[in-house]
View 1 (tube, helix red, strand yellow):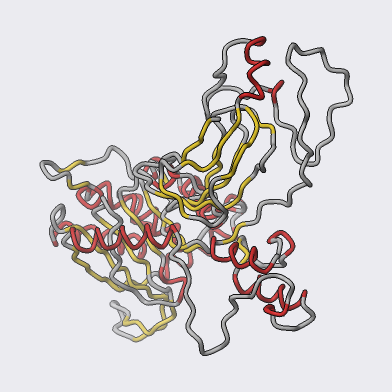
View 2 (cartoon, helix red, strand yellow; view 1 turned 30 degrees about the horizontal axis):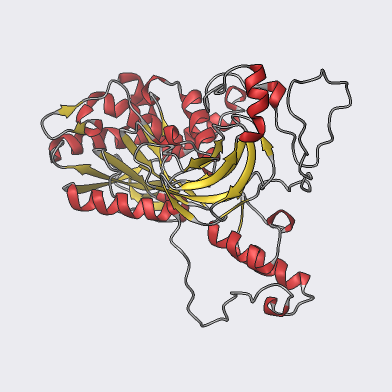
Length: 429
C-alpha cells in the first residue's frame, strides 16, 4: 500500500492546511485524479494523485495543519496489479505532466456506469465498493469555520452567504435558523463553540496570517526601512479617470487612480532603477523587468499577487492584469507562482479612508508605495495664491536604505507625484 505525503507545492513550503477531501475510503482513482484541496501560506491548491488504485485510509482530517513530508493518505495499488501486468508497465504519467489516462478515469461519486458495451479486459474480477453519495460543490471557508460547521453537523454548501467565503457569522446564523431560533448548543449535534457577547474567544492562526507575520517580522528587523511622504493635488488624474470611463475605447477597462499610480510607478522606475533593485549581500541585482506587486485584502488575509513585466504592458493591459489577479486572490485561487517575482509593490490603503502610513517592505524588495485616500481638500493655487477645493492624496514610500539613499528615493517619489499631478508628463518619460 503506497503512502502519499504532503508535497512542497511552492518554494520553501513547510506546512499546509487540509481543506477538503475530494475522495473517500474505497474510491477507485487513477493517476492525476484530485485527492484533496490544501491551503498553503498564500493559495488554495488541488493535489492530484501520483498513484492509481483504491483509497485505503485518509490519515489526516479536514482543517488539520500538516507538515510537508507527512503521510496524508494510503492508496492500495494491489487492486490494479492485474490490469497493470496485462496493459503494460506501471507508472503512467507523472502528476501534473502530460495527458490524463482517459480509459482509466475514476468514476465520479453518484455517476452511473457507461451504458455502451465495454471491450473485455484481461483482469481478475473484483467487487466494486458502493459508490458514495454525490458531493456538494466546494465552498471556500477558513479552517476554523469548517471545523465549526463540522461540529454543528452543517454542510457548508447549504449555508447562505455573501462574498466568496463562508464566515463564522454565516454558519452561526444558519445554525440558529435551523434550530428554530434556539441556541445552536441545543441541536442534536455536538455542543456549539458559539461565544456569548463579552466573552473572549480563540481562533487558530491561519496559514496566510502566519506567513504574513513571519514575512513582516523578517523584513522589519533585517532591512533598514526609511519612509518619505508627499502630498499631491491629483485633480487632473481624477479628471482623466472620468474621461477614460466615459470613452468607449475604455469601456471594458477597470480604470481608477490605482491604475494611474501603477502606470506612474512603472514609468518612474525606468528612471530610478535602484528602487526595484535587490540586495544580494555581495552585489545589487537590477532585474530586467518590473514585477509589480499589488497588495490585496482578501477573506484569507493580505495577499500580494504580482503583475510580471508590468513595464512592458499598455495601460489597458495593465488594468486587465491587476483586475484578474485581485479577483483570483479574493477567490482564494492564486497559485504560488503568481506571487513570485515581485520587485516593487503598491498598497492602496486609501480605499479604507486612510490618509497614509508607513508600509513594511515585502521580503526581497526595495520599495513599496502606499496610496492614500483621494479626498476633496482646500489647496493653495500656486498661480493665484488662492485657496481652492482640489482632489488631494498622500503618497508614502518605504525603501531599503541599503540599496537606495534618500536622494534616489526622493527623486523617484517626486516623479510619481508629478505624473499623478499632471498625467501629461508621461509623454516626456
